[in-house]
View 1 (cartoon, rainbow, N blue to C red):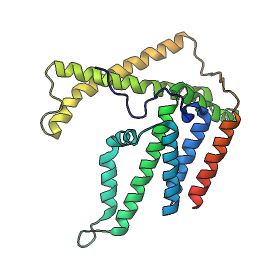
View 2: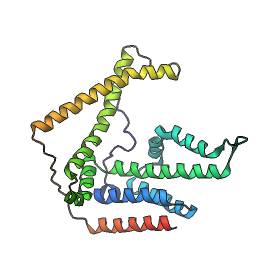
View 3: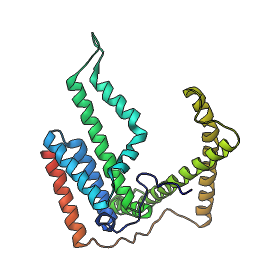
View 4: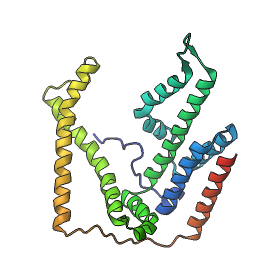
Length: 252
């Protein structure tokens, strides 16, 4: 049976967001994070939410994908909301101001996750690594190993799907051996998942060692040749428009 793609995994397409230069999308993602956390008024949040809706529309990413991407963090988000809402000093009660503060924090996280999912779903991992290396290229003048950082980002992004596949393979193998990973209480389930995590760590270290040996055999020195093309007028226009949106959102 074919497994459904992970939320945020690259989805091939020809949408306006797919055709945008990876460097522009990287800069806009950083700006979107600043706008999401810098918005402090209802109008600012409205501008930030409008930016997310525009990004979802331009990339043809559904709200369901954003919801699936937030599912692993639901416990943390719920705890953050309750921790701000509940007042334990004196008689325990719910603070309206704390509830609003917690809702704003959760809203900021949702916005950032949504922008990150759009970025990762429309940008190939090698393009992401090249974009970061290109944007950090001025730091090479002060001794920062930009090529090594770009290679590390590329390797890390490539290891994410490998890790997911390894977890699924080990989980199926342990279930075939009679392991019950989804039965019993929390303590029993955690003990059961140690049968997956230990082989997973061993397998990842083995893959990393093989990759390091392969890079050493090919005389890798940390240098990286960037093949970045000049930005088009469309890319520059979108970048300027995105930066203007960030400024308006923060100052709203």
